[in-house]
Image 1 (cartoon, rainbow, N blue to C red):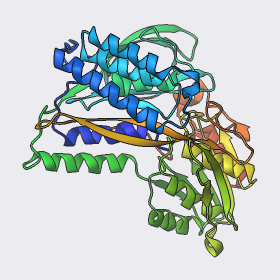
Image 2: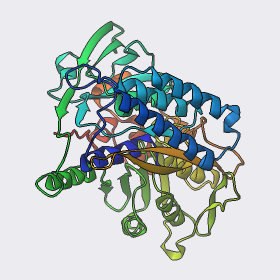
Image 3: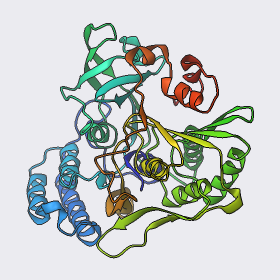
Image 4: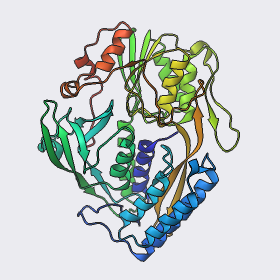
Length: 445
């Protein structure tokens, strides 16, 4: 149940490993779109054929939600023939897949030989989009962008709950931009228009994995692990706060962490921003919160599939109070875990309505080239996930037991009213400003 952020991170790392032959979609660091040559078009058409074949064999709904798959891909193939840039080619392929309107089915283009850092972060809070972090020393900071600014449009597109993931996919995975034009409303009500430039770092187009390049790759992997580590804050034996960035732990790691959790009377599990991850992590973790085996969800695919089950950990289960925090970025396995605790009346869920991106998917890797290889792939939903109440969370999400939305003023002051409320529920005094400092934003250098 990996989502876009998890897979994009994986492909970003893989792109450093492979010998890249396909230029990046969108714009090159010099701002000029890479022109499509005849072999680029043929390669794009070949990718399209492979993706169509993968969908026909593996997509969970053989009716494709009523979409005429053959007609859509035929139209896409004709468009590729007249495309003038690589960005257009990859955009055409991506759109053909996105027409299915499925959160877990999307095209992952070949890696690029440069990285783009925007220097700021945004998020849907309720039905509004806010700037949630600005990197010190970035162009965003220099231009006056601040936490708490409400974003009305980005490059003339207005973010909504429904299109937000597609905008992130476009700007981060499909067509990274050298800059963005933002129309904002400040916390004091003033309107502003800013053009924020991205920091673009050029890397080698071809890497020699027999030399120094392999050590650079290892360091990149170590940096990625650091930014996605599990983080904890303890309040004596009364409370453990666990910031879980994604469901990427093996069973042994889950066991070790829950051994630490069991030493406390209460747990606050912070799944805000958690995009999901591995089913095995979800099942192992859920087993620690029930004294009996529990069904997480049924799976509805082309063929009969076994339900997802969480086997109880017996006398090792955690019997203390549980509060789970979610927001609009909590997706997939994070949503399943939260909803399971609600349905089984095992914990309290606080925060914002979750992403509503809950399907089971598989990743299909592919490559183009022989001597010089570019890796790309597609994520395909192979099953809908039906909770114990008979409902799917796709496009619906988890509605918290208490909806608590940080205000623009909270973002400016870096207060965390959601965490403060969670601590209050388990009997621990924690002011919102102190809660906001527990897990500070970390930026790549």
